[in-house]
Amino acid sequence: MTDISKLKEITDNSRRIVFFGGAGVSTESGIPDFRSADGLYNQKYDYPPEEILSHTFFMRNTEEFYRFYRDKMLCLTAKPNKAHLKLAEWEREGKLLSVVTQNIDGLHQAAGSKRVHELHGSVLRNRCTVCGKKYGVDKIAQSTGVPHCDCGGVIKPEVVLYEEPLPEDTVTEALKDIGTADTLIVAGTSLTVYPAASYVRYFRGSNMVLINRDKTPYDKMADLVIHDKVGEVLSQL
Image 1: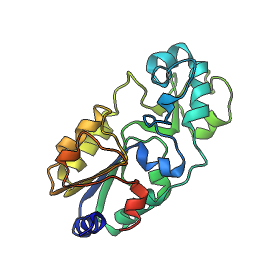
Image 2 (image 1 turned 135 degrees about the vertical axis):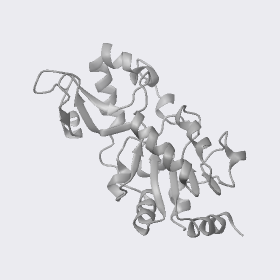
Image 3 (image 1 turned 90 degrees about the vertical axis):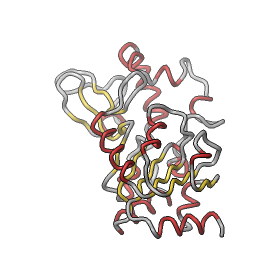
Image 4 (image 1 turned 60 degrees about the horizontal axis):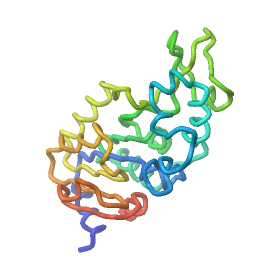
């Protein structure tokens, strides 16, 4: 039996699938990841991306933050790929419980998924740091310099930056779903970013499947490992 056949057998017999995804889910939509050989962390800027995407940098160098953010973090022409579409299909069929994602691009929702736990927030949501007024992504994309609210306050993306905690309610719901899933599909993630990578340890179900282009520290824990592109794998099911 091929790996795809094994995966199809697992998913056909599952009723509470949770999909835990990382950057590799979005790369097939043309969104660059961070840690691959050609990812953002290996490109040259005046500051390392890890520093730019930190809370401290946002507060101290807000204009420089937004110059990088608009250039590299907003990929608004990207469309859902085969992976996003298959997951939305499974949810409509009642076999997928939820998507837990480390991505901030909103492509799961664009594909039609309803229950999506965004561990690192979303570029599509923005909020004034003074009055809390909410803004869509167009407010950021169509402005220059530092975007300001009607009240004069600085607008900040609802994206979790380095030095910031993950959203507590989102994490609670994600862990509850992972803990009650019968199948956990972990895909497109190196499982090296903590605390998110540790969440797979909450899984108590029957089948843990890992789909990733490269090996991960959790390969030995999985019941099935497929080293390939996520969309290419899921589109065959």
